[in-house]
Image (cartoon, rainbow, N blue to C red; front, side, top):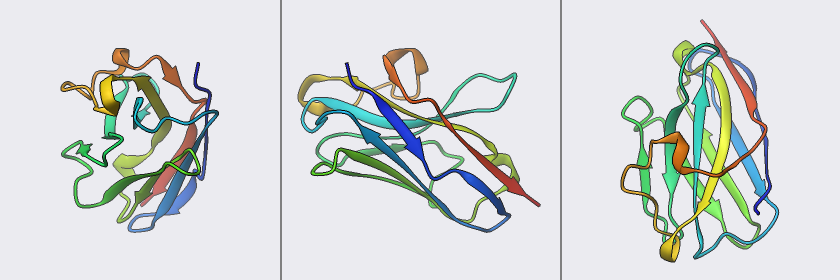
Length: 128
C-alpha cells in the first residue's frame, strides 16, 4: 500500500504561483498512475492532472497551459507546478495513485473512485 504525503500549499494572490509536492512511500515507477485532484467544500472532487510512468499526461481543461504535472521517479516524488493562479483554483489538493498495467493511466482518468491511494491534502487559497 502506497502512502502519500503532500506539501507546498499556501495562500497567494491572483496571478501567483505555487508548486505542490507529493512524496510516495515506495517506488511507483512502472507500476502506478499518479495524479492530483482537488475539492472545494460541499462539491465533488475534481481531477486536475495525471501522469503515467512514461510521462504521458492528462489535464483538466480548466488548468491546461497553467499547471504542469511532473514526477521524479528517483525521488518517488510527484509535483504540480501551478502558474497564473485564479481564485477558482482555491481548493484542497490531493495527491492520488493507483496500481496500473505498465504504469499507464486510466482512460477515464478524472474519476476519483478509480484511485485507491490518497494523501491527506494540502490547502491552496488564491485571493483576488
